[in-house]
Image 1 (cartoon, rainbow, N blue to C red):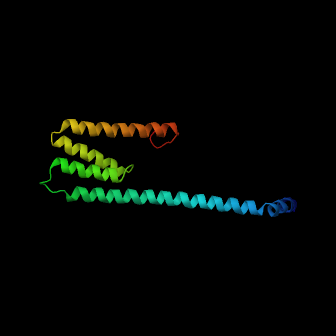
Image 2 (cartoon, one colour; image 1 turned 60 degrees about the vertical axis):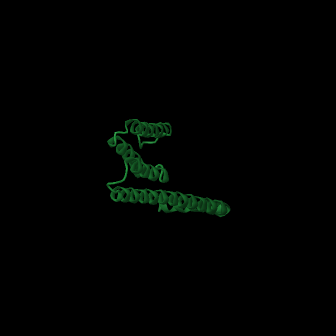
Image 3 (tube, rainbow, N blue to C red; image 1 turned 90 degrees about the vertical axis):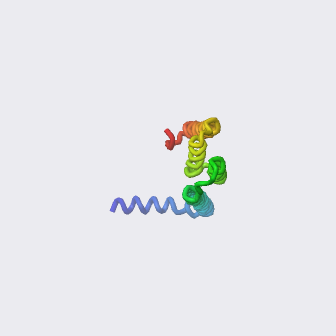
Length: 137
């Protein structure tokens, strides 16, 4: 019976505070729900963008004709990478463009693309380590 008295006593002390601050509590709860909804929507949008880029990259891989020049093929991969920056399939498209240029014996262009990719990845790693993100550590 002792625990009932303690819980009842806490409730009697807490109830007036809840009544006095109910508008603040409701406002805080609404703010938390709104932040959660915005965060969820942004993550969903990123996921949909990643899926669309992956599908476009797969379609691009399958639709290349054998008579297309390596420059045109590399340009189409780079256009895809520019359309979907920051996605894994966009990075893969950049690598594929560099590989196509390399296979076409356009070594300086392929090296330039590979260097750009390396610089972009190193800047991502630097920003991840400065924000203490465990993703790229």
